[in-house]
Image (cartoon, rainbow, N blue to C red; front, side):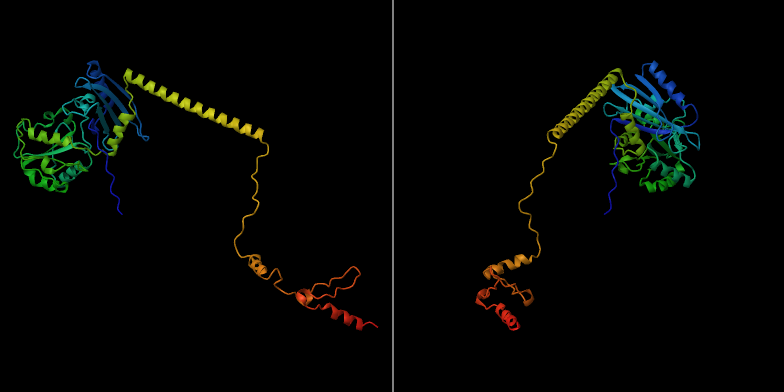
Length: 404
């Protein structure tokens, strides 16, 4: 019987996740300066950095804590990996979690760690950036390969916008700044030129979606998010005149609210944020110390109880050995257990009772019993058993005849 595939866990609604690449040098210094400036301005409560290697892979981690909506605490962790062998870019993973479900109008965690002028906003798919509108390749094969990679190898939200006509300078501006704050650094915008309408839909055929002429469509991703239907995330027309695309923003917000199956890297990042957190407040540190103290007391008590029980057991064993040098042996049974199987004695015993105790087999001549004699040495001439004459007289007569 075929086994059903294991369903992936979905991201908690309190978690914000993103992943990208930093191109160039000075990634750690850029983050360090950004966090220090926000701490001095009172925008964040505190921050911390440390080395966080994983499976012999060198990584550097930054943690920060701030508040949104007056009293909601946000804890975030940015991990920067080693340089890539191909383009010297460094992959980064950013995860943040709030004390209540995440709201898209809260500040983007990416903006809390990264400065505006750093080259950190590259998607995992080479050539794409978060804060810009990315023109699709002119070559058909390159275009199809790019959209295929976007649908399978990224955590970002990809939206394809087709230009009904060549837009002016206002229409060429990226749509990311018009989005809610927490969506701006998770969306990759693709622009298709007016003459690429057929080619784009040909490339999107494998993903099961189509972009309307002069409209937009949100790509489903791989695997598609539960509840995704292409008609629910398709916009018939997008006016690229610098105005706010309200309908498209509504589709993107709805898509961001769908359950997100966690990829292995996202599940690991969420677990590290929760289980390997370092930046504690004073109250949290005191509570953690108290928790460790209680656990240590419980372990000590358990150890003492075990030691006491072991000592009592040894004392009882010693007393037993001193009071009873020879251990008691249970008495044997009076009658041994009867063994099963064939027994000749068991078969002949009932026949003997029927015959009145007589012998079943008459002895042969060679086995005849010796005649009885009295005290004078004479042989007894009485008959044998059951009144039969004895053979001893015949033997005596023949002996006398032979005497001279």
